[in-house]
Length: 390
Ligand SMILES: Cc1ncc(COP(=O)(O)O)c(C=O)c1O
Image (cartoon, rainbow, N blue to C red):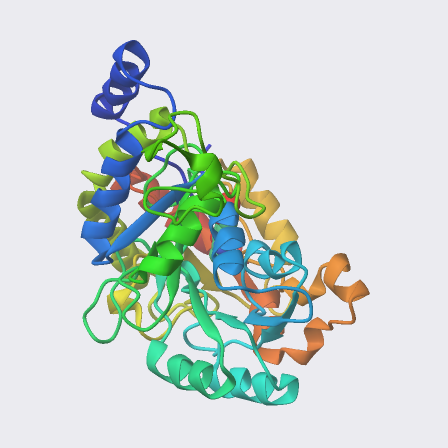
């Protein structure tokens, strides 16, 4: 079967993991720091903190940003649920803004409208949808106006560039950026994630929160009388200074991540070539069109999403997905608008309040896009995609 997304591992990756298993530490060693440094250097951020998933990264980013009960976080109505759930983990609430029809990213005008209606907004979480970076400048202006922290959800966007030429993750116009290393993403650690930031205080907070809230590095100690004997630091002593978690990545995963990072540019290049192939194939097609029509030159191309008027002049989406499946292709819908999920409906959200997200959802389908997809497989998919829609 040909899926919509798939990881790529080579012998180098496997050897890196085996080497780690044979002779090195399994957790809390040096490879995590090497992996963090490699990502920080690549994206151009001062600090990076590796964690066990993108979801954990969002959770810790919300905690480090100081979100708590009574606070509101605003994110895109069209994203994976984790971008909103992180608000609820810390007792805050998520609210949503609609997307722009051409980029599928959060619409700054609707974001402003939502922020105005809410009053004080503690955090804005722009999501770089399918790898296409949001225009950060207007988001930054709105964040300043409403006193919000900006946490970029770049789970789809490792390797993408902002308008100003900086890499996504450099946090040039945000407080923190969050990545995911789930196997469908650009690089994988099995499960894993990372937060990047340029703020030393946020960095220290993230390190502590990742590991139970226990003091790290140069954190000041609360109880000096417990910490020292005759002026010397007690060897056993540590302090849990706040409620944290065990969101650590293992060294085995970090070894894999480090090895994958060496291939990232190749991964991105292949994705770009495949995207051009799809663009050419569907140009002028009367039913199929690429869902993102603007800004893709800077994208990391996590997903290739097509739009088609399913059920209106062609088959229903479910029938289409079934036909494609019977021909060996697994497609998926990214995403059900978050306010449409029963959990959020019960909290009073209504997806129909986000017309662009809603109409996109009715027509969207993610098709195969990953490094090891061959030209022949892509051509076969295109042939079936055209034929089976009628
Ligand atoms: C936009 C977005 N945010 C957050 C996440 C959560 O990442 P993870 O699966 O690593 O927890 C995902 C994962 O698919 C995602 O697509």
